[in-house]
Every structure is written in structure tokens, then in C-alpha cells.
Length: 305
Length: 219
Image (cartoon, rainbow over all chains, first blue to last red; front, side, top):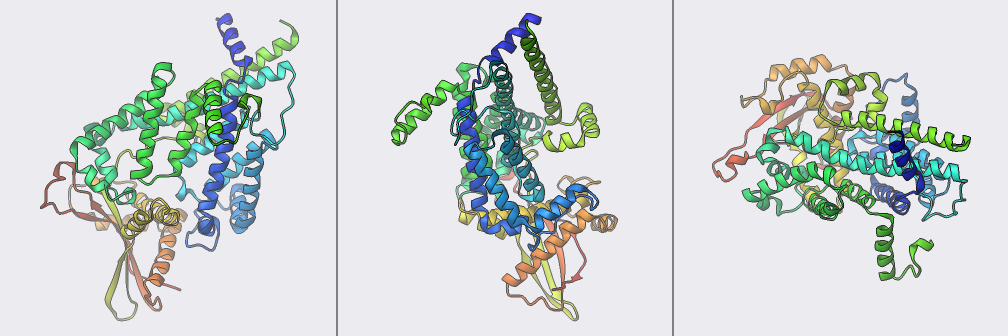
């Protein structure tokens, strides 16, 4: 048992196995947060200010957090400015784990300021930001290069970073599996009728085609049970190499479908962004290098970055 | 094993133990309610609120579309009332502007969330209206449920938000707000059942799930 544990500890200490994609994820998530801010720019007062029609339903008035809420709401312009600044720092890898921690706290507060607008994508983004605090995501895409640690510290850092990467992957699997279990015990999903109802909801009617599509019973059954199967099997089989690519491709299709037909946008992007963690560092390098050379903005292999 | 290596080994073991405990707790909280998840929620509400997410994702799916009506009449002589339905219109606007519909999306979330919360407050202790066989909801129950929560902060925040939104909508419709009374009505309009999707004679039922009396609409 002791030898078994030691073997795995050594393996986890040896290398930061996802260093490239963790760095990419940090940058991509920061870009996503900036994009969310940008597209909501006209509605920021409505979402976080005090002058809008929304009346805040904050926690107890005596609560310390209530004080922070009130302060952030009454000075939401400054709050957003500081938030943008922290995103920029994290994007460039300045301040490393400290800026990552501050960014996570900012996101928590921002989401608490207006819970109405939060969807699953925002929650997953918040969780990823939490795990990224512990991740070694500063080997690539940083303004200032990281100094080499001494061997002992590096070992611990590698182990924690590998756990952080694993946590992000587990979080995605947990989201699918939990949704799959809830669906499995729901009679409407079990009967194969759920996608019909979901696509018939006016709030989620993304295209004029929805009405036509849901009236095809064969489509409803296939979409319903394919969703169930995907959500239940992805978390179990994605760890097996031979199932990984088909499952990731199915996931891309699944999220693209929701994106177009159900008009749920940010949610899909965050889910798909985590997929890269299921690839090895080498595979990520190769894909990025191919894309980079296609667009001609990188002339050397990324391992040299 | 030298001292440095031993320290690294101990720290690694601690990290593994924390990792395992964290993920067991997260797994329990993510699954449908069990005794264990209730204990964790009770013992550590902060942990549950921050990390314990239940990913239900359209479960159970709605079998109805919500409708939110603002009914406005003159405060003195009552006369004819103006009725404006907003949720269907928001959904249409959202669909029309997709995928560049973020403004509509924000309004959709803000209004629907308040509608959903009001329904939740009122129907919390009773079967949901969609599960009631009768075609009309118990209006007496709605009135008594509202009376029981009328002073609760969460309820008044939701109701005031919808009243504030009604002021905006009236302004958009160029309806004068002076001396007007408003009633807020929420209904659930049935989606054609799966088994009857081809039935051309199907008529959807619409049941009232929330209703306020007429109140003066202050500016």
C-alpha cells in the first residue's frame, strides 16, 4: 500500500502534465470574462448598479458581506474598473497565484451582486477560476517568465497543479454526470419527451426551425436519449483513450446544438474550453502549433515559448 | 529518506487527503438529495453555497410557458383596463436578435428570475400548479400564501422589481402612469403535450399562479 501511494506521489510530482493547456485555459477564461463584460457594457448599470429597476435582495443588513455588496453596488463603475484590471493582470500572468485569487473573489462577488443572470457556464467558470489558483499555469503566455523553483518546491507545485487540472476535468464530469442522474430519475426525460418540451419553451426558441424540428417524434426520442447517454457515459469513458476523441467530438456537437437552437451562449463556451485538458501537453502543443503556423503568427515550436 | 524528501512526502499526502475529502463532498452535494448532502449543507453552508452545485440542466423540463400580465386601470373611476403581456414579447425579441441578443437576454433573465421567485414563494408549500389536475389554481390559496409572506424581504424585492419594470413597460407603451392602479398576474400556459403534438383541436390551458390586488402605481 505504502509503495503504491509512493509510486503515485512520485508520478504526480514528476511533471506538470497539463502546463500548456492550463496556461491556455487561464488566458481563454480571462478573454471570456472580458467578452462577457464587453457584451454587457450597456447593461452594467442594470445588472450591478442601484439606479436600475432591479431591487436587490441582499442578505441580512447586519452582515459584513452586505456592507461589501452595498459598497460595490453604489460604486459599481469603480468596481468594474478594478475587476477589469485584475482580469488583465491574470491574463498576462502578472501577480500569478495572487491575481488568480483576487480574480476568483471578484467573480464570486460579481455573481452574488446579481444572481438572476447567472447560468451554469458562469458557475463552471467560477469553479475553474478557483482551481486555477492552485494550478501551474504560468509556464506559457506570461509577460514575465517564471523562475525555476528548487527541486522540492517544484515537486509540490507539480503535484498541486496536477490536482488542479484533474479537479477541472472532474468538475466537468461531475456536471455531466449529476445532470445525467437527475434526468434518469425524471419521468419526462425517462419517457423520451423532454427535448420536445425544452425546445418548445419560448425563452429557448433559438431559431424558427425549432417548431418544425420538435414535431418530428423520431428526432425528439433520439435527442432525448442521446443527451442522457452522453451525460452519463462521458464522465466514465472519457478517461479511456479509445473513447476520448469520439466523446469530445460528441460533446462539441451537443454544445453547438444548444448554442444554436436554445440560445444559451456563454455556458457552452466555458464547457467546451475545458475539453482541451483531456488532451496531453504534446497534443495541445501540436494543435496550437498547427493553428499558429496556419495563421502565420508563430514560427517556432511552442515548446520553445 | 532524508528530511527534505520526508517533508515533501508528508505535504503530498496531506494534499491527497484534502483532494479526496473535497471530491467526496462535492460528489455527495452534486447528486440528488441524500442524508449525507443534508448533513454537509447543515454543517457547512458556506462550502455548500460556494462549491456544492447541483447540475440539473433542464430537469424537470417545463411543460408550460410563463406569462406575466400588467393590468392597468384608472384609480378613481376604474373604467377599462389596459392589459400588457411581457414575457412572450421578450422571448420574441430575444429570438429575433439572436445571436446578438445580449440586451434582450439580460432583461429576459432579470424578469423571468423574479417571476420564478414569486411563484416559488407562493407555491413553496403546495403542489406546483402544473401538477394540479384542476384547470384553475386555488385563488384563495394564492391570496393566503401572499398574506403569509408579504413582509418578507425576498418577496417584496421580487415584487418591487416587477412593479418597477411595469413602470418602464408603461412608459414604452406611452401609457400615462398618473392616478393608475396596477395588478400583476402570472400564469402558466400549457405547452401542447407530447402525445398531442399533432392534435389540431388542442386548446392549451392557462392557469393563474400569482395575482396581486390592484395597487396604486406611484411614480
